[in-house]
Length: 235
Ligand SMILES: Nc1ncnc2c1ncn2[C@@H]1O[C@H](COP(=O)(O)OP(=O)(O)OP(=O)(O)O)[C@@H](O)[C@H]1O
Ligand SMILES: [Mg+2]
Image (cartoon, rainbow, N blue to C red):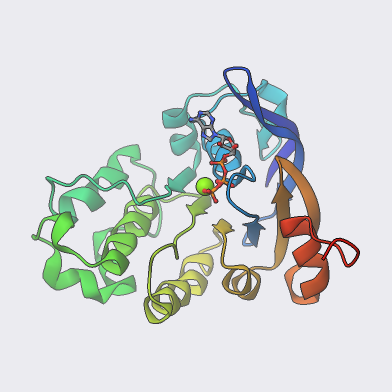
């Protein structure tokens, strides 16, 4: 469904990604794990258009999109839940959610269904987004992305800074999201949560894929080596 072909990314002269080959199919959940600075967020930004790349290096359903701006990629069905949530502080929960609907894509998701998915938001709908707990803010960020009715949802560290219980709540929503045929890319530093929730994984190190495979077959020792660059000899 979405593929990257030798995807590279730069911040000025600094190269952050060195030729990433990645693919995700329909209804698939794929995790990207890797330590700080490995290039995970840069990769998501390159897919959703916050960073542009040569047209052929990103394709959605075989159409090259690497040069398209972000707002056009939202219209094609790519939606990002950004690192740190990035809610509008002066707006209410519902106003924040409605922003996601501006793409006007037809589909299953609407405000009612987002509230069904995250009932904790119902009584907070008119409260400022800043009055919410971290977990509730993350629910708003996910709900906002769902309201654009994406085909591909990109989640950047949705568990960061949240308690294990809240992380569980949020991860419980993922199967309901995928049930509608959506594909999900999950960027996570929490390896266990990521592997549990995904079909396949890619591990990034220094802007390259250091390991990939089926999540259910991932071996701890291999992941440690691919994640930290630690091998038996160097440990
Ligand atoms: N706006 C920027 N300008 C310059 N360099 C950047 C910028 N954003 C990220 N980088 C650099 O690009 C590399 C990859 O960063 P990126 O944010 O993609 O990593 P990450 O895997 O998401 O890390 P984290 O787990 O800390 O979020 C890092 O070396 C980082 O310092
Ligand atoms: Mg990041």
